[in-house]
Amino acid sequence: MTAAKPGLYANIKAKKDRIAHGSNEHMRKPSDPDAPTAEDFKKAKKVPTAKKVPTAKKAPTAKKAPAAKKATK
Image (cartoon, rainbow, N blue to C red; front, side, top):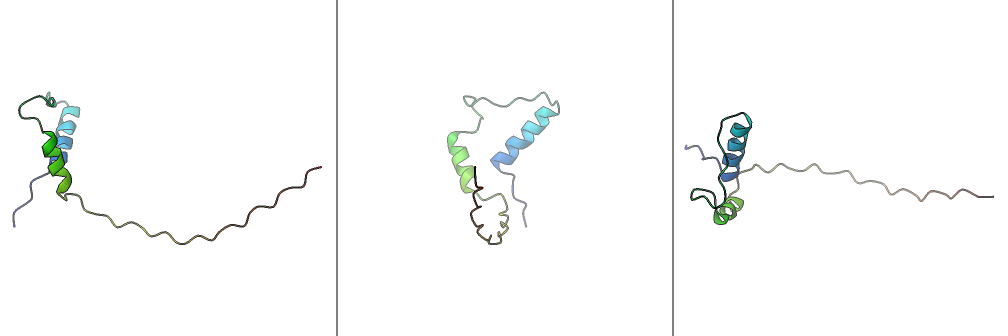
């Protein structure tokens, strides 16, 4: 079984982490030749890379009765 390659967003996060730790790298500008294009980001949206976490079901709540108004003098 072959291991899946990390996705676009995983690569971006890894590079930002390396930069934060002082790697002297820099992020490419959108106009640079090897920078990800808008089409690359659209493709990355379509690829399911994250595991879906089931959401916890909330227990039904009882409706509260309206509070009685205090009598004023």
